[in-house]
Image 1 (tube, one colour):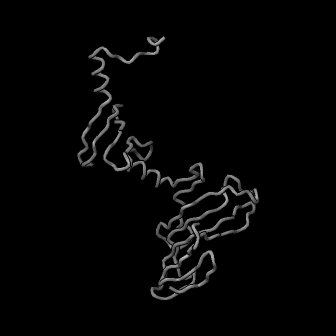
Image 2 (tube, rainbow, N blue to C red):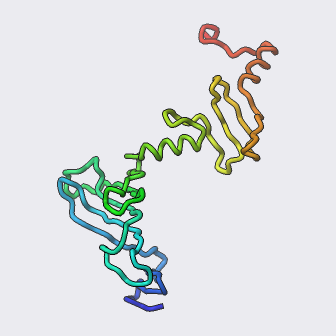
Image 3 (cartoon, helix red, strand yellow):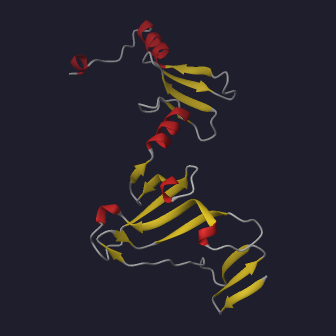
Length: 195
């Protein structure tokens, strides 16, 4: 490991192809990026990932193709307010080109809200969760993927055991429960009956 800088609280080193920012205290190390703001935004910084056009040699930025970056900046909601620290986190990825137009924002959010999601990404996520590209997901999955709660096209709400996702097995059916309760004379009260 090659030490670049060190003091009593931390160090910066190069270990092979890894840049290490280390803390000697029980406090995580920080890399601070900063820029001024104006009516167009600014502030924060970018963590960029690139592909070098020439393998095995050090190249400048003009000899690299950006494949993605994480951008921290002043939120669009407070643009034109110099010094307002409300932040926004943006994820941009290259869709297969070599210029800035190939970089597309896939996701942006603030601490308390999602501010933008790429429509194609939203459609893909809805599809993965059992919805359609034009509507809300109809399926909610457990974190381990074994259980599905699905609103079917016919309006029935069903819980599936999806241990084998290619052949999910229904284990609870709302219509079955309602029919069973009706057979027992246990009908859900209507608003008129409840008064």
